[in-house]
Length: 449
Image 1 (cartoon, rainbow, N blue to C red):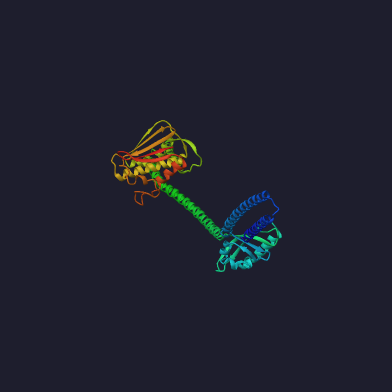
Image 2: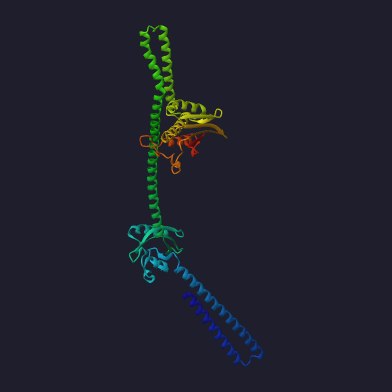
């Protein structure tokens, strides 16, 4: 601003001098009696032209001065109200020039900031960093250097600043930019804390998930064990039914021996005949045990098997006990159905469903108790349906009968895991589907593999 005013004053002075010279020259012309009138008119014209030129130059100078003042005002505003603090420092760190943003950041009036050492506003733990930074700035002229320091204000508040500077060509001072990054650092610290919390939470969740998975595995193993124990109990009962008649027959053979001896009919031929018949009974009982043992042997590989054979093997284990309870089983087979999976587990599913049907028929005291089994193919599926006339399943619980531990029986009659394990075997182990629905007279289970 001062330089512009000086230039304006010099221009005005020069113009006054020229006007004075014009007046003197005009007076000398008038006083010169030897000059002709023609030369006088020419000279007056030249002076008028020169006066017009001077006035035009003066107008241009005034316009240029106005433009300079506007530009200076604009850049002064940009400098003072920039979002970044700007100041000029000497090599000793004394503030020569500062914008209003710098004064605002440091909490001090600009007039009181000039002439002070900038280091006074640098917190103790960062002064060595700032001193080294300033030395590096003046040592590498023209290269921009930067550092991060904590600043304190006169109001005893603090801020974290990113400082950038480069030395002027004269090497006597440097231009410094101050960027307040307090909120950024606070946000980064908060983000780091949240990340740490998330890592800890993730670790905790992983631990809990692993524990939950282990618990579920243990529960699954317990369910399988409980289901097998329940089925084994049923199988022991079935073994008793299967063995009762052969044991009676074997007992009769043994009891006949002393009577034949007393009657004089005990001969070698008679002994060999009774021995043969007794061994046939014993062999039949041994085959029954082999059938039960194979039934409980777990399958290790997926194989193709004939569904009808598995059904026949399962029915052979329970038919005696079902007959004694007055339950008739009718089987309608449509050819030899082939399926892929685990035949022993498939047999366990059949057994679980048949046992549930038996319990329903016994509980409802159905006089002509009937279980109807049907096998057929549907597309590429081997389908087996097992239906009874036990009255069906109540509508409010039919969707829950495959849930673990859900049972409508007393605590001494069921564990509530047989149907749950059956659905798990068919759908998870063999990729099939097990469903149930009510018919007109009872419930019908449908197995698709």
